[in-house]
Length: 377
Image 1 (cartoon, rainbow, N blue to C red):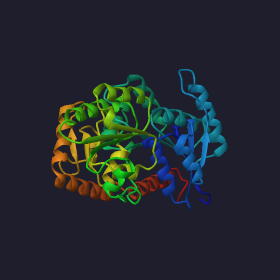
Image 2: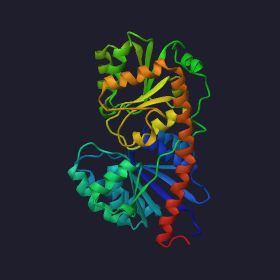
Image 3: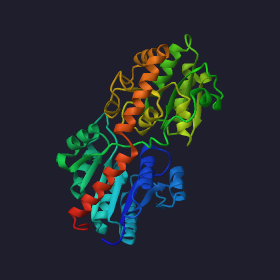
């Protein structure tokens, strides 16, 4: 095969998010002598889309909006793009882009179709299960970001286990590392070094469980000098800010909005908390661990594949403010434990969840699928 392997990664949009960041990270790491990656956004390019373009990669933006009547329109537009671009692989991420792109790619005669599965859901979604079960027949491979996701995909979509590959997300441990002392990092945020900082970075959405974090902080603030920093945006931003206000912690909580200096923010955090109700395999947890933060996360699929409770961090039941407060207090009172967990977390990120390992697995998977189709020797 003389030409480069063209891969089109299809997403809803290229604004901030774990999926979008992993697409960007993969593009930067793929062997440029072999692969030609292209990003395709159905709705918008956003901040990460702009970064992808500045890094020299192409971004195709359809500028469409999903609604109950857009299904056929989106598929037709994607089909036209695929006929023009002639990719060897179409790789859809998350439910809607993956369904649209696989149908359109099949109609356009694209050789390899991939669906990337990112989430574990708490409740069944019958319509999604039926559609995904049908479209999975068009699919060469499903990539699951964790064993928890793989289990749900096999069960929900009724597909054979061999058709689902687990490829963990990876973190660039050269970028995500501590370059500032915790005192220096706090000073940049105008936080006194004596304050104990509880931090969250990621999408602002009710499913992330912010209100339980605020409740936990409220129960501790009278006994310890606490600050909370929250970085990110999302559809629940107004509601989450209101809950911080209603809980009485808004005066010690800083909402920092969309930030790209995440390693420096994480360096200012004494304990990173991820109080989610559902995850697939959270990139931000890997990032916090790589920086060497002590971490607390809910004991749910995805999180509990990253953390061994008591070794790399603490796991607590979802929706339990008291358990979360107890875990935070434990880390406040034991500096040695805090440092030990941070060091152990960094080591685990380096050894098991590096970006280099993720990229190697993705390259090998792409090449294997094309060999099976007769495009590579």
